[in-house]
Each structure stands twice: as structure tokens, then as C-alpha cells.
Image (tube, rainbow, N blue to C red; front, side, top):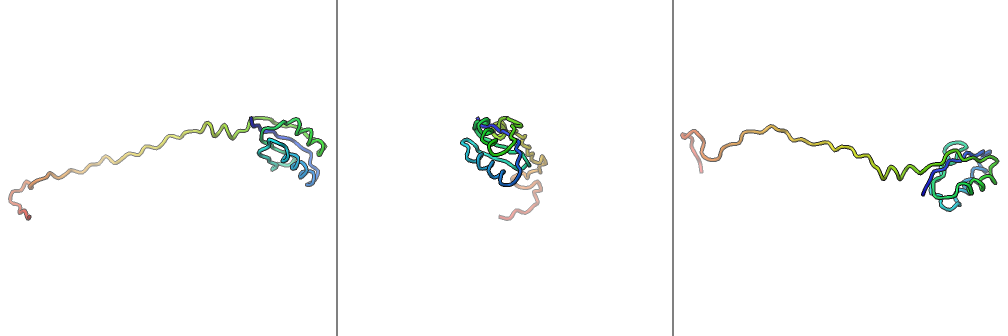
Length: 112
């Protein structure tokens, strides 16, 4: 089961950040890595979070797990919200139809 883990790291410089990314990328079972926020590393996948924490502690001085939870993306796909479809109505005005045959005026000329 895929889960989302958020690590808080003490990254001093760019080189430390690159080493941490390399360790996480090579870890089996990792599918998504996000490092947009400063000092936070979000990892999604099926992996052992405690072993990953141990490996990250070899690189960074301070590593802590902030949040652990299921990955939210599959739940949204399984239970989509259905919007009601708008009903299209046709205009109800009808025009009188002509009656087939000769007109009511018998004096009218019919050309064939």
C-alpha cells in the first residue's frame, strides 16, 4: 500500500540536498519525491520509512518524520463526484399545421 511520508531535514547547503535526493531516489519502492518546501522532503511509495530515516541520518544531522498517511490520489480516482447533468428542454411552442386538400375557399384556382 502506498503511503505519503513527510521528513523534516536540516539541509545546510545544496550538496547535502543532492545527497539526500540521491539516497531517496535509489531506495526501492519510491514513486514520487517532492522537495518544494525548504527543509521538508515528501516521499510517496511503498517503502520502509524507518530504514530510509536511518540512511538519511547518515547524510543530515537532523531527520524527523513529520507526517505519515495514505496517498490521497487513488482515493480521489475511485470515488469521483458526479455532477447532475443539465436537462435540455425543447421549446413548447407549436405552429398550426395546414390541412391537406383544397382550401376552404371553393372559388380559388388550382393549378396542376
